[in-house]
Length: 337
Image (cartoon, rainbow, N blue to C red; front, side, top):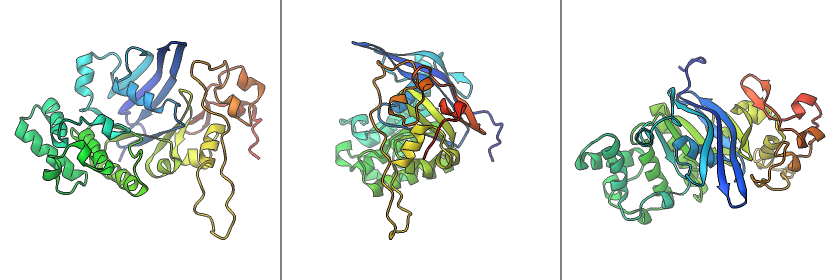
């Protein structure tokens, strides 16, 4: 059993990431902080453009430079700051201590190598095994992620596999070296709902076997409810609310979180009853170059007050290990009716 005071495997502390564009500097991540213990899952949720995938790339050391750069903060993996490590050290840890399942496997897998060769390369680089042993281990990984006839499938090229099988290959590759941290960036994009469920069940089962710490990036609150222990809600490059999955789903304190939860259809109601209309979050995520001086969500918020438009809200503690960046928590002016 994990103890509450156990040291976190991963600590992300006040990470800032900027991109230089033709129209100015965009702060794509703004003081992003969270920590995770061994075997736990953090769900990062938010609309497209909120900074979820950029958070993952910053942790992996994959922010494209230029035009991007990490301008502040620390990323500690078992106490070692990845931002201070050498390029060779980060390359050694990537795929070994920390791995990532990318959104679209067809753009992440190399089309000119078989999937077996690509998984085997992980063992050859990180475990220094010979070619034959590496291929044998690659076949075993394909078997572990539920691919039938793995010996035959290892000789297939990515385009010869279905979307679900390609995603399983990506999971096999990411888990080959039993990483301490696994980042899954919307791992079921473009897959049908049946395959989605299989992929999430696979990640959950493998996590239980290996006690891997997981960061799950998604826009689906239903997935968060099923998979996550803690939740970080992101908007415009900043975490606006963070807490346990029960706290976030049963007592959300930020208007944006309330809106995201309200967008989920209620399928458990009596079929004879009229279902309430889905909540709509009006407007769109703002350009990160044109953010004003106040809360980034204020232009879309039905509860915004004058202070929301003039000052960035700090984090307010709304429960045990539950924080939210909303001025309404200070003033008590919020009214959800």
